[in-house]
Length: 250
Ligand code: CA
Image 1 (cartoon, rainbow, N blue to C red):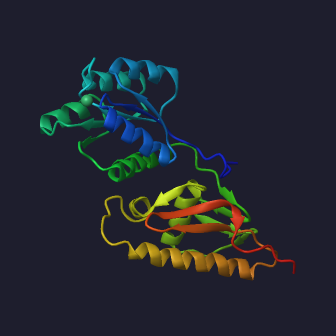
Image 2: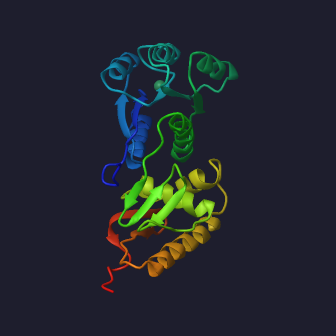
C-alpha cells in the first residue's frame, strides 16, 4: 500500500537552455512534488531519456544544438506513452501544428505561468493514469481514502462526503506533507482554468473539516485524524503525523 511518507513522484524531464526558465521550472516542479531532471540540450535530453524512465517531458523548441521538433519526433518514436509538452516562444500557428505533428501532446506559449503549466500537467497525467492500474487507497491515521471507489472511511465506517469535499481531501492526501496552493486546489478540484474568487474553496474546506470531526466524534474508538493546516496566503497542507483529535481513552 502507498504510504503518505512515500508518495509516488512523477519524473519530468525539463529540456530548456534558458537558465532562468530552466531554474524556474526545476524549482517549481520540485516544490510540487515532481522529480524533475533538467537538461540544457537536445542531445543531453535524448541521452537522459534512455537513462531513466520519465512520464513527462517539457520541451523547449529553441535549443542550442538541435531543433526541438526533432527531439520531439525522436522521443515520440522511442517512447510512445511519454507525455510531451512543448514550450515555445513561437506563437505562429504553424509552429504549434508542427509541434503536435512531431508527436507532442500539448504546448504552452512563453511566457506561461507555473500554475497553468502544473494544471495542464496534472490533467494530462490524470488521463494517463486512468488507463493504468487503479490508485491504491491512501491511509492517514485511522482514515482510509479510497479514490478508486470514491469512499472515505474512519475505522472502517463510512464518512459521508460530498463530491467536492471528497476530491479536496483526496487532492491534499495525494500530496500529504506538502503545501498545496489555493490555485492548485481550485485548478484540480473545480476546474483547471479557474482564476476567479476562491471562496468556494474556503466553504468546502470548512464543511470537510466539520464532517471529519463529526465522524471522529461518532466513532466508538479513539480516532487519529490527519490535521489540515491552513497556510495563510498560500493554501493548505495535510499533515502526515499530528492528530487533530487527541486519542481518547473512553
Ligand atoms: Ca531556448
